[in-house]
Structures are given as structure tokens and as C-alpha cells.
Image (cartoon, rainbow, N blue to C red):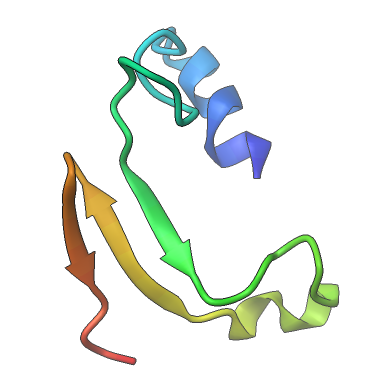
Length: 64
């Protein structure tokens, strides 16, 4: 998870504006139906995406 969040932001030198949810940062994130830290590794592929928040607007996943 860190590799696609704060570590990615560091690699782009954008850690002050993206990569974590904090005041004054851009909060684009995906909402999933299970905690990836609490499922078996082989079940990660089965986690469903509920939606995405992009620039403050909710975009529900209409495929599920």
C-alpha cells in the first residue's frame, strides 16, 4: 500500500501535495469493500472497488 501512496509521491517529489490524506493535500482515493491487510494474499484479487473520490467528487463504481 505504501508503494502506491506515499512512496510513489516521494518518487515524484510531490509528497507535500499527494500520497496521504492530510489537510491541504489532494485527496484522491479509492474505496474498497475489504481491508487488504486483513484478507489472505490469494484473496486480494477478489476485493471489490466501491468507488473513487477524485478532486472531492465521488465516482461510484457502476460495474459491480
